Amino acid sequence: MRGDYTLRATTPDGDGQIVPTSLVANGQIRVTDVTLRGLGTVTGVVLDADGVSPRTAQVVLTYTGFDGIGQVKELTKTVTGDQLVTPSLPGETTCGAVCAGGGTACSGRFTARLRWASPIGCRP
Image 1 (cartoon, rainbow, N blue to C red):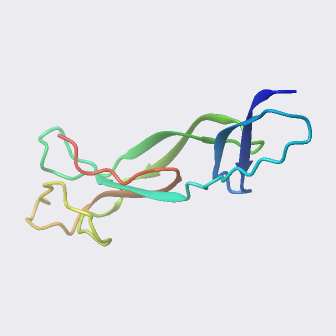
Image 2: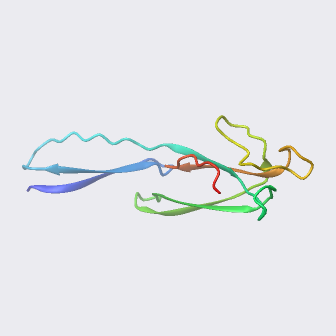
């Protein structure tokens, strides 16, 4: 009955992990640790084509996660970049955005909580 198996554990909110494990004999007891990945925050600023002016826009985030029955699949989340550009969380930056009147008190920032996501910074 030797075999390689996959242990899959998920929570109702879709957090989870897949871990490989092996059994070498009938009746064998195998302890396997499964570490849930948790949630991450993705935040950024939508800039106009000039690379400086922030703007309000729909942002579609695509990431890999578990669906409701524990299968790994590509998921998407749509958010609107309509928050103030001014950083509100530790580690956030303005991504070089400058509002029309100067400063960062205009719309353009988006924030999304995603399963398994990692924070991202400004991209050129």
